[in-house]
Length: 611
Image 1 (cartoon, rainbow, N blue to C red):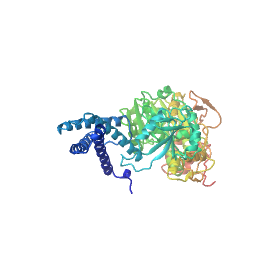
Image 2 (image 1 turned 180 degrees about the vertical axis):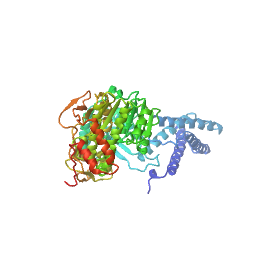
Image 3 (image 1 turned 135 degrees about the vertical axis):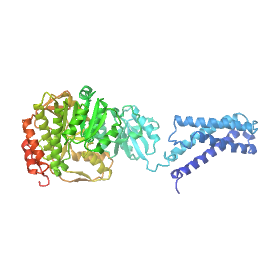
């Protein structure tokens, strides 16, 4: 037999009407019985009242919207709604007594009837909510309820627990908290236990997921908690940090996958606001590749720093549309569809909007893709960078920042070689025109959340049940969150002396296999297979950020200035660029490779398919 709590919305409405009619009839007769005692008997007057009360009551309840509201939990608003409804019902009920000449009934009957109606409404809704598993009032709900525990019984945890009571997808059964003063006590009827106690009773409560509700704790403590939870093979999710929450009210909609930077043991420093603003505040700023992962994050952060103009430059209409929709319509934001392969399009944008700062993020950066499209990679990453840098000089741009990569260090693939070529272009131009535009290079490793990043791929593979693919059991990579990388890029441009290469401190390299295992554990799936697919052409086991230890710590400990200066002069760069411009259209691969090997002699291509 189908449960009444899983019926359609119409049936649920009919059930509620039936319950309310029963409440109103019961309240009339109970109030008479309580007041008259042995003098109570069912006669025509009592029958009349038993008919009038529900007729009046249903009209009043409809007026107050009792059948339109989705009453998910009993709170102040719900109690006030029931109070008003029962009071108005009593007022009309009293008038009906006078109109029908039933004034011989004691006046206290009216007061007793009001109390019975009010408390019956309150109790009936509470019971229905409990019996229906919180989904009675929402006919759309058909998903199973998850049993969860909240780690953190502070203000954020209590607010989240309260918000979850509104919903119908989670059942909050436990609080976990390290504060011994509140362990064993109850918050909103929810038991607070220690982590050790939780490990013993989680099976009893059938906990399926733990939500981290401690936005203000230190990163070190947060990482320790996550590490402990990873041993339990249980799904872990979180709410945003205090910085992300800002002024937003904590709600169940904020529950998200474990923040990816929680997977990394990094010391993230607060940005220097003066350095962030130096090249951006009240200035005209252009971002090339604005629709890409790095470029779009730069745009998000630049908007907050109140530039005079933000010119978002990209060849992809769709990518540009996406970031512009996210940022929203702002008078100072301009979208420009153009390509860095056209010096005229770049120069026109610089002149038209009087650009003072350029962040050059436009690049092809996926190693396997460039290995199969070498000429396109060279044209975009090398010639495109040359066009942007030359346009910056010719049009009086104050500051130019190139986004580079760790793959430019002793490159073993064409993507890395083209980015090293781009670095040499910038340094040679910086030496030649040192008094015109301040050029900066910022080099860093993998950023979490960028297109092509391994971590979003792992999440997709885990969500569909595996397998999770790792190229090699010993492969390691440096990682940094995309927001931190963008912040450090902006600050790097502000401390540059011209021609500098800055390396962002990526922390310790991460073994990809260990990262995959940790993500599987924290997803709650313990039986997902890991498959090894083999290194791809040009792919290294280990990445490098610099050669040797020749570096200088700057104002920000996560920004290092390295003494890697090119000996290639600008005339040589110009001559080799001209050779590339002639060779690429004719698909003269031999000449293109020769040019790259000339300017990047350390380039040793590694074809892992042959090794």
